[in-house]
Image (cartoon, rainbow, N blue to C red; front, side, top):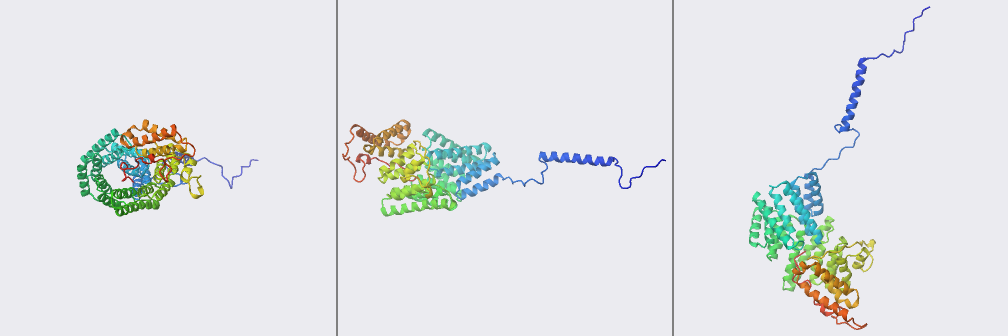
Length: 495
């Protein structure tokens, strides 16, 4: 018998539906499109971390300006360097970076450091002009950087003249583009002073002051013009005005203090001289205090204090401050040279030898500690050992060299290694420093004295126990003590 199949009561046989297939196809295509968009970055995954906002060049510029006003010049330079990375074609950023780099060179202690910083400033200024050839400010800053690069201590006379000529051309170009540019007038005045065109310099800076007396640069340059003319009192007043505008820029205090020190040096009245030296120290101490507040480890104020105490004859205080400067930069050969000169002037001749050796020959970390403390450094006391590299022979380091060979020659009878080293130093000066000897003819006399001392020591060494002809209380032959060091040829107005 035929029985029909039972109908499904609870389930249905699957049936294909064109609508359902169309739905799944659309869903699959949508998923593929979403994946492609996410890979291209057009759509972000909701599970990704929130993106970090990208800083604008303007925000870096504001940070740089704030740091410059606060006296943090290195931080200001870093901020502007970040700004030009974001906008490498921004001429204004390059110009402002060049200005800060130029000013910051005043706080560096060695020729090599200053030269490198000024070259960086010049490169930045040239970038500004390249990106904005018709911008008056860019040409003014380039003129400023060129003028500071025209430093006879850092470059030879031919390069000095080349820089000054180009600086004048840039200043003129800046004023052609905008004859009301106050900074251009001020920087042009500074260039004219360096070209010894005093009348024109005064005319330009007077015009700049009439246009905008609110600029620090204008008062600084006016002080420089007055300083160049020997009007140190008036120069100090202008530096004070610049300080009132920018109270955290320590190089302004250093310049004002240096002018007080110059006035003290020229004063015939002992009481007035003492007062002027004290005013000088106040300005240097203020610069050191500002750096301490800003956590800036700058040795320059302490070196200025050391030089001032050295001129007053307080060599103990001078040495203490030079040692303080070395705590900030224990590997700075120039500071060793300054400390060695202080020891020499205090008649601590033997103590000056290891310190000057570090400056001129370089020394190991252990030797640097021995030179400073006459023992190994004690890290628990915060004493830092450091490698000291050789300080190259230059116009600013030549006095360290001649003090070193003079002391070695004078003490030659005490140590057979002293005179050979003194003669080696003299030979280096004569073979490598022809330009320096031409600018400092006084050194030739000291060389002759040292050579005579070593010649006498080599030809007829004293017998054991035979007393040497010495100046009482020094242990150094009288003739060598007559060397003419740190006289009128030394620029006492230098911080």
